[in-house]
Each structure stands twice: as structure tokens, then as C-alpha cells.
Amino acid sequence: MRFLLIVGLMFFCAAPLYAAPDPLADLQAAIIQEDFKEANSLAKSLVKARLTRAQSAQAEYYLGLSYLRLAEYQLAYETFKKLLSERPSVELYDKAEVGIIDAFYMQGQYESALREAVALMNKRRDSEQMSVICLKAARANLKLARWNRARELLKKILNDYPESFEAEVARGLMEEKQYFAVQVGSFNDKVRAEKLMKELLDRKEYAYIVETRSPEGRLYYRVRAGQLTALKDAQELEQKLSGFGYPTLIYP
Image (cartoon, rainbow, N blue to C red; front, side, top):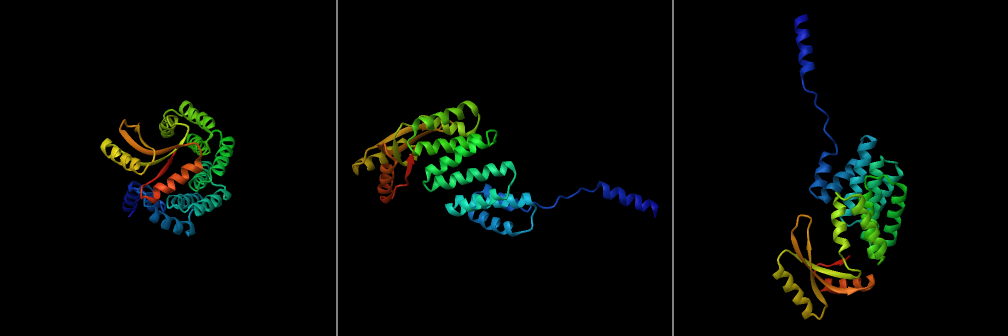
């Protein structure tokens, strides 16, 4: 009997210990797969579930992120604000603040987005999200036609975070001219770009092609219309071209 007990204990000690399943695993998978409707549904369920404080905060962050990606900007803002009030970890705090900046920016509230970004930059000077925050502030300044301040922030990203993803974006933005334009297409086929440009010219729009390279070195032909000094004029042109059925995006 004693032998069997010893053998049983040896077997128990040698047996692998199985960790409990991660309740956030499916939610994280949905986020990675960019299935934001599924992520939103899962996050709502998890926020109401009995999780650890850290898990609950993470689920709430993903809920805000899913709202953001589903263009539910006000709900995203409210969710991120609620998360901040619950004093999450420093890392999650910074991510939620970036989410609030995005919520303002995507609604065209560039002054509010900039104010949030500058406040966060001053408050969290050692943040791991600093390159992201600087880029958000630079983009908001560009939309407000504050070209010099935008360039200062873009240079900061290039100097302080040269290996970051944001540095690649900053290099592209540094090449943008100091005016607004409406992009209506981006192709790796120059013939298609030229065809679209001709369509716009036939509509009596000032259209042209801008050649850019991706971080991987791939050449793109971006078709744009207008060279405008005021964002309001660019927004009017965007509405006009969107009415013709073109996919539009204001640059910078």
C-alpha cells in the first residue's frame, strides 16, 4: 500500500499542470482578426462577467477599441473615459488615452484631439506610447494647418524613435506639401492611376498623381485633387467627390 501511495504521488508530481483557459483569448483573437463586431459582442459579455480586476480592465479596453473600429466614436470615448476612472495599469491607461485622442480625431474634433495629446505628452513623458502620441499630435496639427508645429513633432519621432512604425509614417508625412488635398485612389498600377486622374480632369477638377513608396519599397501612385489652404475647403471638395462615388480621404 505504501508503495502504491509513493507511486501515486510520483505520478501526480510528474503530471503536467494545466493552466486555466484565458477568458480573454477569444476576444483577443477577434481583435487580431479585425472582426470588430464579434469583438464588441465578446467584450460586452466579459465586462459583465466575474473576472479579475486586470482582466476586466483589459476587456473594457477592447470594448472601447471595438467601438472605435466600428465608427461608434461617442461610445468609444465613453468607454475609454470609464476605464480611466477605474485607475487601470499604467500601460492600459496610456492606451485608453490614445483611444480618446482617436475618438476626437475621427469625429473631426482636431482641437480636442490635440489638447488631449499634448496633455498626455506632458503628463507621461516616459510613456511606451510616446511615438504614437507624438504622431497623433502631429496629425491633429496638420489638420489645423499648423505646419511648423507638426513638422517639429514629426522630426521628434524620427530622432527619438527611428525604429518605430510611427517613424515610417512620419517620413511620409514630412514629404507632404503645406496644403490640403483630397485623395481619391491609390494604385501600384500607373495606368489605372492615370485613368482616374483623367476622369477627374474631365470633371474640371485639378487632379494629379503623387508617387510614394511604402516602407517595403513598393511604389504607389496616389491620385489627388485640389491644393487648398483651408481644411474647410478641402472638406467641401471631399463631399463633392464623394458624391460622385469616389472613396475620399483628406491629406495630410
